[in-house]
Image 1: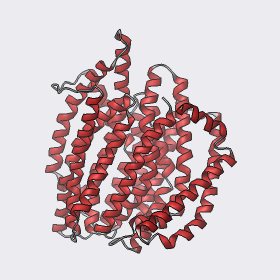
Image 2: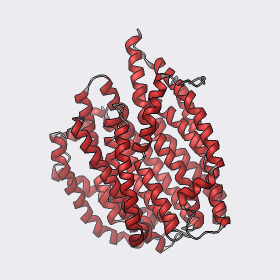
Image 3: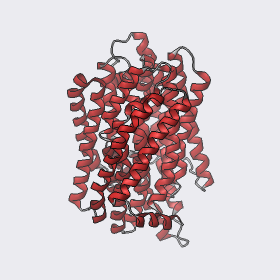
Image 4: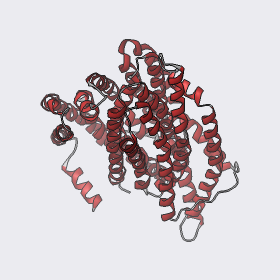
Length: 526
């Protein structure tokens, strides 16, 4: 399997999803604005977002995929036709038998205890009435079923990823964004609270559509899971033992964001949660395209290589993954820090989202973006642990970063206001990636090769050269980013194109990307 091609497949579909996500957020800003209604919806939306990251993109996949691959490999060795899939599917059925009742119970409990959960996520907001808080609790209850659906999506998506059907799972979030966009266009009203209520209902509807999509795709690939009686077999006990610590390890960023959201809702003025959320959405665009895409591809690839005893190949895969992460994340970091104002204005500066809201969103974005390379590198480094069925080390490191984030929030939130929580999250993620890297080096599971060492500083110089050009270019496009939609699109497109062109040229001039690399990629695509 070609890493660049697989990343291109996942990244391309993720790009479609993220663009639709920006359309959704732009419409949300127009119809709801930065108000208590938007803060209430986004606090409630943090819960399914967190579970999606922990299960669909984190803990369950990190534990399930290596074990599923191991079962498939054992089946191949034992079967005459070399097809180990049936044994792998038996393990998947055992996992489903235990996962489904747990999810049903958890869904019911969250519906019952939505009030304390919302309180924990928001600190009961800052200066709201009892009826307003009851509205926030209602929004949380509408969104709870999404957790059940997305967790089952994670199981089915993990099977398809293990079979290198990456595109199916990567396309599923598109359904979420299309559903929320449709709800905004068809059912928005002048009452921002009613629009937020419709959006909350649409979240759970979207989760059901994603589950149906995965079920149909699995059946088309010959995967039909039967419902069994739950049984805690040794394999399932092992799966649970790996999943629980991985929930903390893979979800460190999400845990940090929950802490940031809670402190912002309870300590800052109304609208601050919205500024942080909108900034995070922009920051999530490159993270989704690069980090989640790389994590999706690297985990099954490295686990399969290690299962076949190919240690050198696994090391090579992780080196190239790190190289790709830096190649794509460094220019994104520079661009979001320098050009946050025109980007936020062009995407969100409509209707109820005014110039002050745009400026504060850009400030929060700059703080978030400082940690963008770290967010992405975590996705590259953690597969080195998960593929070896070690979920405890990332968990231990994640707990350290959660403490760092909490301290950073408490220190920074008062003097920096809405910039404090994003900056604390960036610092915590940087600590996370530093500790992960040190642990992998100490164990001999990752050694940067000569090619990676040679290119890192060249990539940094190329990104800085791009930043100089963008600093002057943004002044030219700023007058256009508050115009009609086609003027905004053209202005932002020009900004992106000019930055990308300069970066590509700079990478060749600096020797960070060579003609041999281009020829290699062409041969791989052939």
